[in-house]
Each structure stands twice: as structure tokens, then as C-alpha cells.
Amino acid sequence: MTEKQNVFKELLKLKDNSYSPYSNFKVACLIYLNNNEIIKGVNVENAAYPATICAERTALSQVYSLGYKKEDIKSLELYTDSESLGSPCGVCRQVISELVNWTTPISIYNKNGFQLETNINELLPHAFEPAQLIK
Image 1 (cartoon, rainbow, N blue to C red):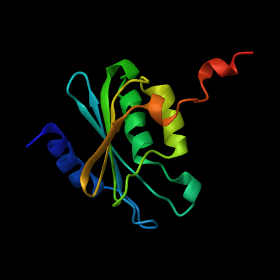
Image 2 (image 1 turned 45 degrees about the vertical axis):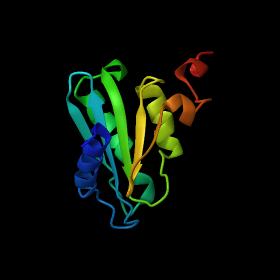
Image 3 (image 1 turned 90 degrees about the horizontal axis):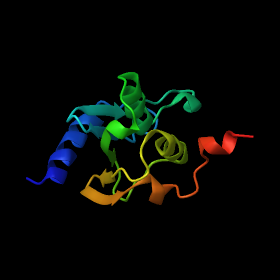
């Protein structure tokens, strides 16, 4: 089994932890750290839709809560419960742009397995950055 197939297998297990009673759209995220630790996240919906949190932000919140930083992240692996290519929403792209190095690999999977390897530079080339807040 290849590394991508193993990751896919783990993402399929993790997606079942998703709390998505409204959309029934399960999303799972694994963040591999340089120390070989794996941080997990799933989407967690809420009847008040703006309170919903995506899998990517769930996992990244844990990364930082545990004291890790962007330099500690080796890769971000994302699964969307779809037949077509799913990718991070705009809010997640913005968060990833600030919390993950711009060249860190982001692998995207769907029901059919591995689909695409990219990075946040390709997904959000003109991100709003902290430097833009300086007067």
C-alpha cells in the first residue's frame, strides 16, 4: 500500500467522526507534523450555520493549542465526501495562509482517493496578510 493509500484509509475512518447532520457532507483533515505526530480534525456543524467549523480549522486550532507552529507542519491532508474535487473554503484558505507555510504540501482526497497535491500559495495566491494591517 502506498503512503497516499494509507493516508486515504485514515481519512476515511476519521470522516465518520464528523458532526454534519445538516449537510451530511463529511470532511476530515490530518496534519502531519515533522515529529511524526498526527493531528486530526473534522467538520463540526451547528444549527446556527456561522458557528460551524471546518475540519481544516479544527485541526489547525489543535496544532497551535498543542504549542506547535507552522514550521512544525510537514503536510495537510484533506478529505471531502464528494465525487468531484473538493478544496478548502475561502475562510479555511485564509486561515491556512497565515498558519501554514506557503509551500507546505496540501493533499486533497475525495471518495475516489487521492486527487491533487497543491499548497496554499496555489490555492490563495493573493491572500490578505498580517503585513497589510500595518499602517
